[in-house]
Image (cartoon, rainbow, N blue to C red; front, side):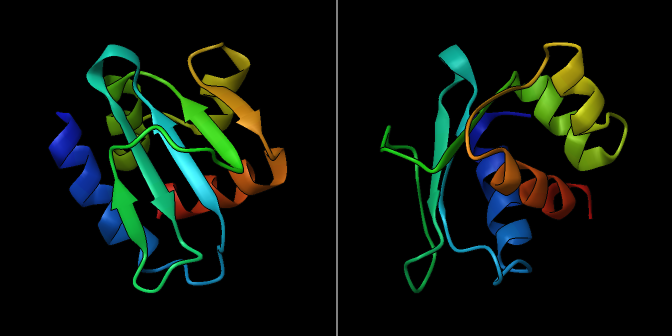
Length: 100
């Protein structure tokens, strides 16, 4: 999975989560980042490095495993494969969106 494929997947997933109104950043290190502002209508999705309510940092491979359902984000967090900066409550809401 590359950054563009991950962006498409996130756009698909976030449209099914209208209850989440926040600024979220997925940080994939050297592979780039995806920024989402779901306070906007339509939802803003970009690759800019903006301030966010929560930042989820992991590799693209780990993120792909979340989307495929082969890796649990909670276990990845406990193992240090996923780092969360900001609102843990929001991160847990995103967990449910990504796994569906």
